[in-house]
Amino acid sequence: MAINTQQAIQALALDVLDELADEDEYLPFGGAILVDPLASDDSSDPEFARFAVSFGTRDCYRLVEVAVATDEANIGVSMTWAAHAIADAVQDEIIELVGAARPVCSGHSHPMSVRVDDNTAWWQCPTTESTRRPIWPRV
Image (tube, rainbow, N blue to C red; front, side, top):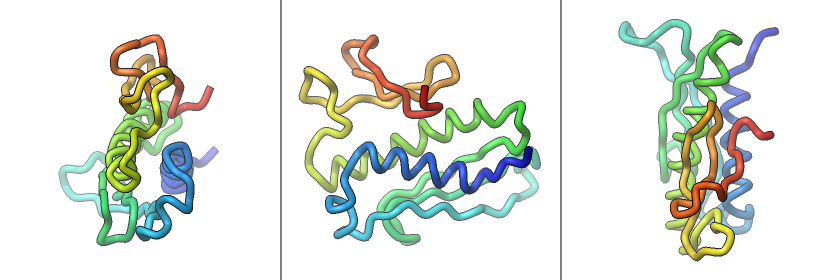
């Protein structure tokens, strides 16, 4: 089965954004997720598709580049790291826009941190490691 990596990245980024804020909080700032393919250069691995993911406009508030494997055997690991990069970048921007911790850590006033463990990207409490929930893949 062919994998549309651009659609997968778009869906992942929208899931992250939806978890961090409501539309009425970010739309007034031009907030949206844009995923643009990046041209490969001589140093790029042809087994990876590269994308610029921005929150805001293409002039962007926050931009992160991700590379995702194009073969089914390796897409999971690369999507995990893409989820980490996207969540980290969008979280920083949302916290700055709304002036509050996002996502709120249960029982604490600080935001959860982005972590990767066991090929899963997690929102995790920085002080209580057992307090976490998946970003990607969703369990």
